[in-house]
Image (cartoon, rainbow, N blue to C red; front, side, top):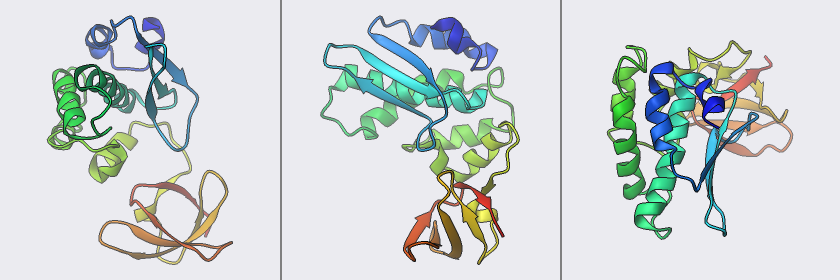
Length: 198
């Protein structure tokens, strides 16, 4: 397991990550890309715990996602399962676990202020932090995807599942988009990745 993880994270983070993963009841699996999540955490009835992380993430997003999921495991161990999945106990745990990694040996200098800002009050997904998500994207493999906020008003775009939408107005934080096939209105986060059609 350790060798498998080692190739997905910054070299300077390896020993710290291995220390976090010493628990015998914790299994880490690396999965093919899932469109709806970067990773997840599960507790099995037999007492084992499993974390999965997507293999297609760049090393910095992979590390943040891995620590996010380890924070779920630690939160369960310390507080039980009656607390909210992304409540104050998880936020505190995620901050505490992430702190040793927020340094220039592990993250590039341009990411550090954004990561530090994000971890003042971490969200359920780093993707909802537009500035951090954009900064992390520059380390991704090139692709033909565009963020919603970059799509011109009135343009059509499609999602990974080939559903087609037309971009509308911006509300406070999200964009109104109408699905062409159904006429239904949906709200998109500014940094949702889509493929522009025209």
